[in-house]
Image 1 (tube, rainbow, N blue to C red):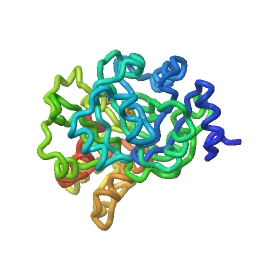
Image 2: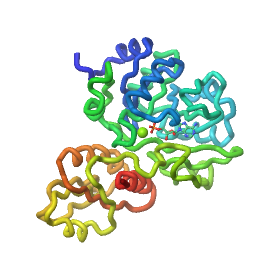
Image 3: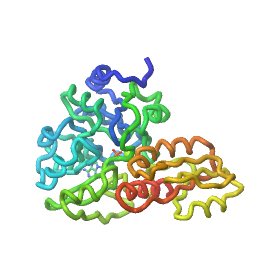
Length: 319
Ligand code: AMP
Ligand code: MG
């Protein structure tokens, strides 16, 4: 049997044996293990080559499991959970003592969410424990949104990749923390800020030290292709500057017309930010495989999901 398959039963058996497997979610594929298994948690960090000071997100099957993970649940956290779970919202809350330090990197807080993917919800239903599941990519590289992306990174390191098709949202979850019950934005993601603010009012954005961010997704270089990538407001003019090189273009709605372009990806001809976000990483993976000298990415409108797309493109461009 190929390591990419859709047997939930096999996934349950492997996870019960302290193994790490890849699982689908609506955001990106995750590298999942039992939060209470020291062996599984250690494997997640070693497979990803993720620094041990970076905590993991705990995935639970429903809102009812939240009190067993978090010891304090602010009113606004409850409002958000009711509005958006299952969904691409992670909340960082004070942890219950039984949540292992290896999962939270020794912090007194834990990041938690209910993923919105029917395969993984069914998997979680059949397990007696939550799953720690960071994105299934080597630390810092482009996140996987299809089972084949995971295979490309980790074919020989995993016993199984549970196939759930292409991730519907395609960008990591939005992360919110709380200070004295008031929400703070830690990481932009698949859930637009405007949607959160409609439920709980204005969000503060955390001001952080670039070298020691509260969440690794906030490191200035992350989600990055191997090919040198630039984010630009003037894509047509910039393509012309690379006339003698192998140029790839990542555009929002419209193709850039220039015969010197070697490869081009248009993310949403209809101008849908949702569609653009869901196809973003797959397009970056394809461009990155084409041996280009440079990828030029067009900046998105700075509202709704456009903010999260620009955030990821910005981090893809840093050296
Ligand atoms: P990933 O699943 O790889 O997209 O990364 C999960 C994100 O959640 C990382 O950026 C973590 O740092 C963040 N995270 C997990 N636990 C905490 C925590 N206790 N405090 C702040 N951020 C956290
Ligand atoms: Mg990640």
